Image (cartoon, rainbow, N blue to C red; front, side, top):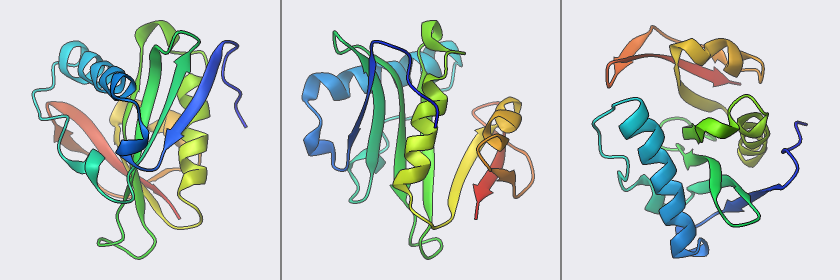
Length: 154
């Protein structure tokens, strides 16, 4: 299991109501910074799925409460029995390449239990996701102008 860098802690909530308002603001701000500003994706990040029953939020924060990485796990039982999806994977620029996202992804996979897990990976990250057992399960597609691949475990 990948360890978080010193000074960071892994946090999780199984309901958005468990997350302090300031912390969720920081999670949303990081997602907006990465997807909206850096990657220039024009979409509604706060899509309502964070409010769904069965949505778990995972994030890494420093001692001051700054959110340095985040992802969410969604219940996709309606698609396929036992299925979950992992998305909104975002890491602050200063923390990339230091194992933060890997530690969060391993925790997110564990959150999903033994059922299948689906992700829509940015194509350039397919090899990285492959390290965790994800395999491509469909054709490449464009999402917000960025090539993506459907990938899954189990």
